Image (tube, rainbow over all chains, first blue to last red; front, side):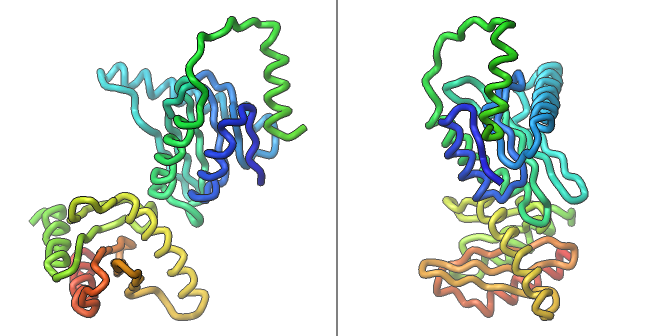
Length: 156
Length: 118
């Protein structure tokens, strides 16, 4: 499985994380669900649905934390029978990003994912471009950008 | 004695051996620290995650080799050593020690701790 990125600065940190933590799938996206990089996904439809669900979970937990009067949760972890899902936010110069990680319990562990996620967060923060003024988002551009992003994520 | 106090007591006995820099109780499945008694400067979560990962792989290798479940393992490096005993419940009792530690004594204390913690 290859690691592919829409924004090249994410590629090296993500590839290193995948290798070290032994994870199965990774999505790196904005909090709105725009995917910047992926590892392990074979179909565009899976990337889009995982990104939408991951962004929704992060938004839900942020609101839950807000209602509890505390800062946003650092990470969300779900452990299934054979696989675990780890979802966490990363602060970068490009703005806050969300990482969705899926790992096999017989290959990796929550401890390993947490350990190497700290390194991923530091590497992404160091590699990210400096913050810039956000451009206007036009509806006409959305579909074209989405198509270009999916092409980049699947090497088309 | 509460379960937490029992864990602390068991780990404290391991760290009393001269040359032991810290002891931890680690969840074998997810590599998280359950209890720790460490000297300053030791990265508990990192040691726990990596030790649990290694324990899982070693355990599978031992079973594949027909040697049965692991009872004790000892990794010796130039500047230190890592010693691990699994408990019956799937936890790991981990000791981080100096290179010249009395391995036999640490092993004994780890086995005692593993028995006490089940």
